[in-house]
Length: 219
Length: 194
Image (cartoon, each protein chain N blue to C red):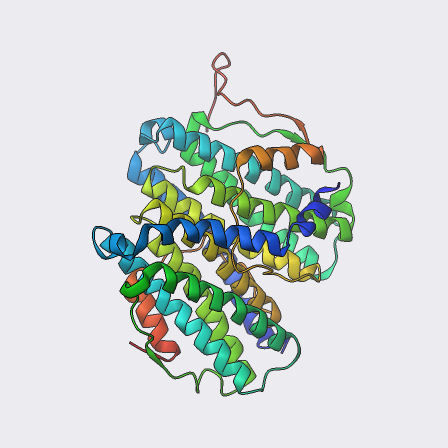
């Protein structure tokens, strides 16, 4: 059973990745376009509350993207774990890009991370990946009820279930049950923040407001 | 405690009860009267999702009764059937008298072989994710919160069955929502007589 149409599935998966990267960006960029041509949160008329949620989601996506990207670069993972890091990393980077595009100048900056060698050890990598993905599911679910804009909500929900897929994927690779409970609980930001802080992975916090003094050059 | 240890420890039955209890106690307390009256949107959404859960319970029950599944696929089907039964019970309880009746279902084709079952389960779980995501906007906050506790479990199931058969568990950067008619078409394709 484990090799059911494996070649076909891999070919499909390759197609799926590129399609997904565009679709993923498309949904969020679409939200931006629906709300304002400039695509920035301010121009789009996204309220301060939604902006805070989006920036919070961005901070989690920064963490995940950096984690998988570093794992891919360290090149210490093997087999399916290496493939998963590559695929999930590309998706998390797409999430970062989409949130940044939506927030425009209001997007928080990327913090600095130190994963303390976890990305260079297959066992530690998988366990941490499981923890990150389960945490992301709880975080998105906790934030979703606060979102006012339907377009932003639809985008966040589409990402929420992808994080759940990642969680199950990493659990499977780690040899633990992908879906333990019938219901997944939300978790408030205060609790998520404590867990993230305790890892010590974030070594320099991002600025929560956009810099005003330095001129920004784009393009 | 290291992050990974903490996360793994959290998967306890207490969490299950907390998630299900809190979310559904909230909507059930509102009662059928409210659902039957002002919140037609809630009722329509919940009844569509009820059809999805009926299909899931039906598919896994039929497959397990057929006694053809072994190993990983069997333990997947048993675990997931338990989850889907809990989802079905929660939705039925919430809808009360407003719940639509169970549709006629024929999963003989979808369970004629282990390959057919794995394919059908993968399609149905992906469909469930898109169905829940598609119904999430425009419903009351209580229904939204309750549905949100289920949709990520459906996504976990989808990734699980995809992992078992060697398909990519998360093929896209975002899960696309499906409209009501698309969900019904998907269910019909799998053997639900709607």
